[in-house]
Length: 123
Image 1 (spheres, one colour):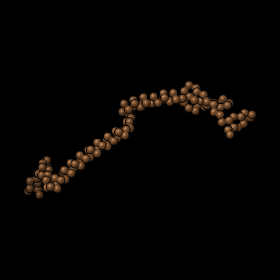
Image 2 (cartoon, rainbow, N blue to C red; image 1 turned 90 degrees about the vertical axis):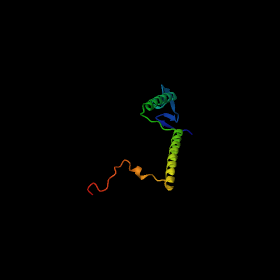
Image 3 (cartoon, helix red, strand yellow; image 1 turned 135 degrees about the vertical axis):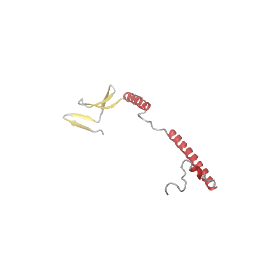
Image 4 (cartoon, rainbow, N blue to C red; image 1 turned 30 degrees about the vertical axis):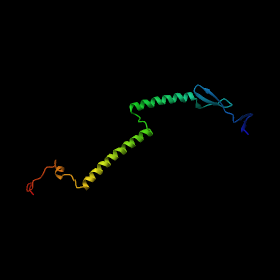
């Protein structure tokens, strides 16, 4: 059963009276009070178009960096994994060289360091 109430000889039920005024949806009660309760679909479409336009302009200016798509994140992860595989392969080659006794020449490591002659320098 519907709920209703009485106020000095006036009765109302749970009936909701609304009308469209421009781009607003307005609720009006039985004594004429009005209250904006929403906007029309056309108003939301206009707002969405304006928001999208501003967003795209901010992205173009570099103020906003758009979120990466799943495909972009996967592409970056694959590139990072390929780079890491290259580093691992280089390290593996270097370790095998060290294990096989092909060490680097220590004389080449001191190329830019001045060689101190023994017996000089007040020692």
